[in-house]
Image 1 (cartoon, rainbow, N blue to C red):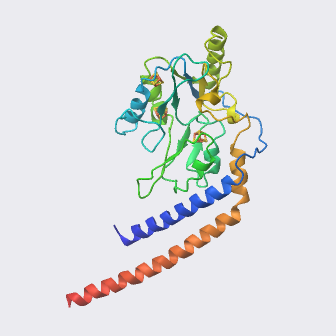
Image 2 (image 1 turned 60 degrees about the horizontal axis):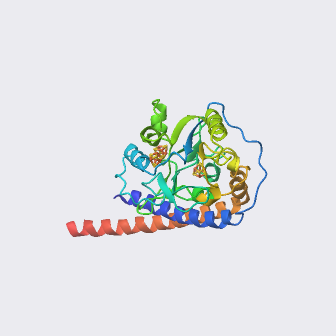
Image 3 (image 1 turned 45 degrees about the vertical axis):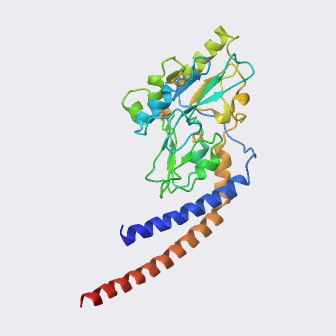
Length: 302
Ligand code: SF4
Ligand code: SF4
Ligand code: SF4
């Protein structure tokens, strides 16, 4: 690896550590506070996925489909959390009140209508598209992990095993959507537990299912209003808080992240200045070291 590349890595590692630290300090300081938000706006054509827990058998075909679509190794059957190469997994919930047997809850990014992750990201690596998906641009990401602290669903995963770890999360199979296909998990689900479509149509369908089978469903679509709404919508026979879903109310969360970011420009400026200064000093030291080495080699040749 060239000296220049090494210097770039060092500076990035440093900034990443500092970013993570300041993220922890600043976002944690306002955790739990509710910031005023404006009315939620959802594009009429925005898409979503209806996840019907009464139809999910826990076969985990969706996990395998997601991994295959993203070029990850196949699942070993033991996925219990999201990670850098597990963008979705099926969470098994036993002994839940209101359910006849275990409930299988597919977890992934919720593709929030107002994503806190995107609001917290200072470099624009996360982006809410008008069509619904919240996309991630690894080329912009500096690995500061602000998005991890901001997300109310604990979704963004960090590539801890990589030297230059970045963020990983469900991308709504945006490449497949652009080609007119459905998300891989939806396409391969054999039971119809996952349904892709326009968010508004999915909400109508959810209402119809609840009306038709009031004995089967709780009268609640998780994601219709939570945190200002999400693109992933859940139907369940059991209370969502008993299934590990956070109770968020209907206010969008991003305002909280924006508020924090606006309160910390001096912290950010100080950190950036210190990082640049240290990087400059380190660069000078490495360059002079490189000159000494070059000089030694030159003298050896003679
Ligand atoms: S669930 Fe988390 S990572 Fe996904 S869009 Fe919402 S805030 Fe972002
Ligand atoms: S939408 Fe795509 S990326 Fe997201 S969980 Fe499904 S298969 Fe994985
Ligand atoms: S593929 Fe469908 S039925 Fe199987 S675990 Fe995933 S969501 Fe449930």
